[in-house]
Length: 387
Ligand SMILES: *Cc1c(COP(=O)(O)O)cnc(C)c1O
Image (tube, rainbow, N blue to C red; front, top):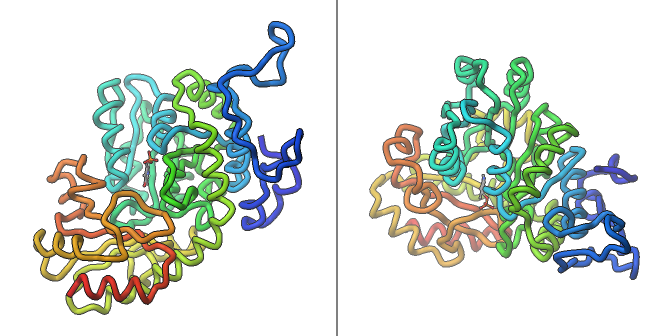
């Protein structure tokens, strides 16, 4: 539960201090890694609030509190990965319940929904959420959850969180927003009425491509209690060392994000002006269909973008993907180093081809996670690779 003087401070201060108390025994300014599975009791049932580390771990609790502060929520819960956090939310549902999800989202989320939870009797409707009006026809008495991601991965579509939250509230449906792409530095979905915000902390929060981690933040106490019950009963908890790495990553999120945004903007404009580049998907362009909503709900446009080449062949795209020298060809995003990725064969390979093409994700689409290197070197690298 969030408490203390940091609740009313600015995000940059919260990122460094919120939730973090000097270690009570030594004064250590950095949160210790409590590498323990259990805690000694003085008599049966008499303990210091810690019984077993799947249920309580002090390093994890500090991170959970920090995450709650940073997303302007009351409670945080951390998991062993982003998909484990997604899994926990879906476990709130019962067979027969229905979920409305975006038709353009992280491939692993789609796989979890269609290959694991559909088998458990949950029904999913995948809809284009760029227009909130498309969602309403799918709401019925069995609808329990709306699942949104914005900006979307990899097409950088924008969903209006406040409009979706109004719709969800009117029908007593939970709204969960995957805020991985924007990070809490650029967007805070709970402030716009979402019930749960999800992060793959593997990405911008950790920020250094050295940890797999996920978290949820929420305001409602009953919802927190249900999700805490799932966290400890299903056991997808992160280790304390991983929590430490995410805590360390958080402290520089604001300075990293500023650079991701400014490098991203320059690269988006470079790509758009390149004669061999086809379409550039970046939500900071004024003619992007979601620009007005992005301006309203985000404080910057981030470092993620996708593009196609005018020569829209798979071979040309593969040649480009194999010839960058600074951009590393790899899945994932949000780290200090720039990455280049081929969604159709890498991050989104688990989505059937017809489904992908129908939603605008072509075979030749290339996705960039723009890092925080010198932008001139990044542009030179793309220029030589495009050829
Ligand atoms: C990576 C990612 C996830 C899954 O997170 P993991 O930490 O890899 O399990 C979920 N949503 C988005 C948008 C992602 O990019």
